[in-house]
Length: 178
Image (cartoon, rainbow, N blue to C red; front, side):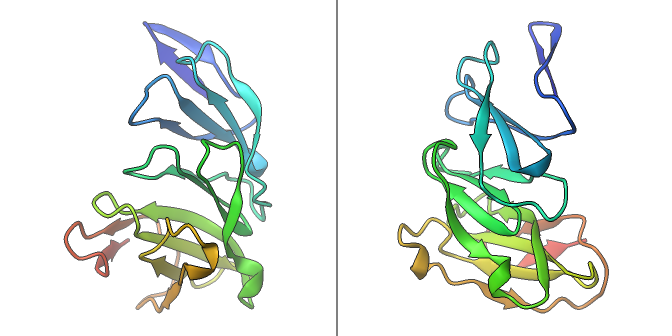
């Protein structure tokens, strides 16, 4: 990944760069991901990057999906064969969803956090044969006690991959999928 700052480009991560986050409450804090669940972090606007941040989410595929909670910037989520959550900007991680507990699933492939309700999350899981997407949602993704987070499995009306999902800002149980 590369960072454009003050009109100059800086190379940040090696390997395949994927997703980036700029902390919505402190723009000095940024994250960049690369394959295998690895995350680079800076707390000084990009002058120094810590490449020791690792989510612990084992990867069944090479892309590292990361999201920051829309209201609480200290909360991060990273996907793999587990969906993990950090409430410490990546210092420590805990599992909040484990695909190994769901027969036939391979990985949490994408994460969608509601823009208007920070407790609502949808996750898109791939099956082992990578056919027919599987979607789950919760309204308690920030529940302090992980055992209280309840995931509802949703049946999709069509087969194929999901490229995007948008959660309705007024009714969290409604979403658009393409």
